[in-house]
Amino acid sequence: AVQSSQDGRIVAVIGGRNYSYGDYNYATRKQQPGSSVKPFLDYGLAFENLDWSTGHSINDDDYYNGKFKNWDRQFHGLVTVENALENSWNIPAIKTFDEVEQKIGSDKIKEAMESIGISMEKENIGLASAIGGWSYGISPLEMAGAYATIANNGTYRRPMFYTKVTDPDGNTVLEGKQDS
Image (cartoon, rainbow, N blue to C red; front, side, top):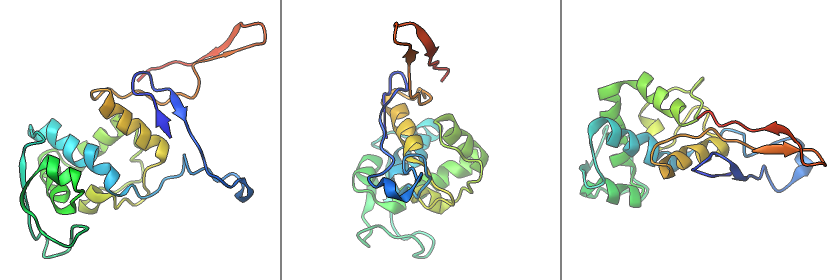
């Protein structure tokens, strides 16, 4: 799913390559987001609520007695947010999420996710959420909206599949509305 950040138009979407399986649409089905949530769930909320920047330092060391690990199974000491995100290290993301959650609480985190188009209706928030361990997941369409929000300087635009429908004579029959 690809969404225009300026106006919310869905520029491209594909539900799958094999239509013999019926109506299963991967673009709208929720799935584990993995590390793709780190920019907006962990670091974006830290920028917004903790006044962090990309140069903020986080200690990448053992956390919760080895319960969480980085993909490379190593610790990297004091790292910047930029470096942690660039390398997709889990521990700095989890520590960031934990600090945000302690400051604003899980309800505010859920509200923040809802504000960028991610449904949190059934979702439980916890440390595993910081690295994509979600109970129900995020759909590619929701993910496209979240990333479009980042590209649009924090302004969310609700995804829109059409801007205008016209009849054969060129008369507007239906017009899409953007209400953010």
